[in-house]
Length: 429
Image 1: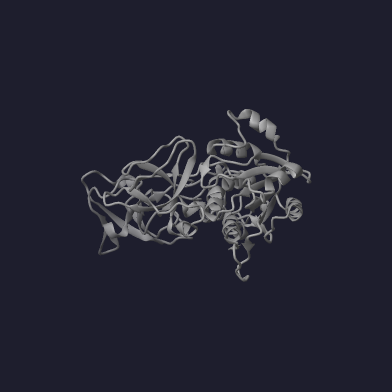
Image 2: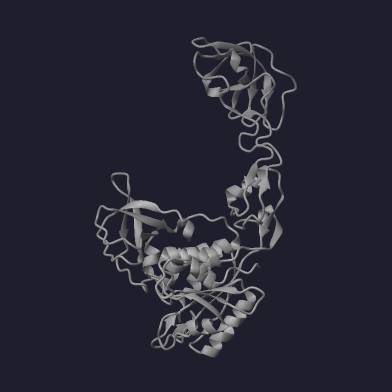
């Protein structure tokens, strides 16, 4: 990868840069400048490219649709025959199905039985739906006055995509709809960016792997499963490491190994200021620290920096150890940076507006993400209430919630009835 700007260069562009108290917006701008874009790509069969990121602009090689065609089952005819206030009687010349063409032009006074998707015959530009037309004896069709306008129910050639126009831009995530669009162009394969490799491991002597016997003071490693699942939902290649205890030598070895294997490294725990929190001093020795605290709740102890030792440095995110704080920090800040590293075009996270059902206590000076339950109120507007306790260790609240209430940096207490912004989990998770 191309060397990104140094941390000092990025910091110089930010007003009020303070590694001990970064606000959320400054962190986002910092990460936009810090996270490198991908340089390597590969060609995949269309069926293997779901959720990958397009590595080139794709121009449509054909018109879509390729021909004028019928939008429904009915009868095709020349719309110029319609006159205001007058009915129309036509002779049925035959029928045509999708995938076939009518061999000649329709003559004045003729119509053609046509199925959805069938190519419009020469001499016809309008379709009357079969349920609006009346069949008469002798192969005649009657259309009552003022039922439709000329040109009705016809799909025009190229109305979806014109030949030579941009079909998908570089950086587009290949969703099911995007894959369908590429298939409609007749493309069997597509060039995508190489899958991003992200290493993860938890830290701390108190961490137990699920299945191990419990012991006093220990907790089971939930972060490993939540963060790795979030990474897999993102479509990256996850390099999952075993938990590392509070031993500086073991932690250093794990960081060095992860930096050699991955494009980005994520850890959880060990980024606070306790005696056993070794990540920040190790990062200062093995690379560079950009910042280690963010003015947000939950998620305040968040370390970001780079590890040296490869042709290009490896980005590192040190998530908080508390389970909710780790998930919130990932969704709010780490996920957008990883999307950029995957090659995705920059898009702001969509936020909905909802009416708060309760008073939300907050002091200005930090961004808060409160777990919320969004529902439709009796007045048809979205409303939101919290899940209750907002402690950063209450992981069950993330299961109850369907979104995060986002209270910005300068926001004070919210009164019941006020509008708030909500980041919904669908899409973020």
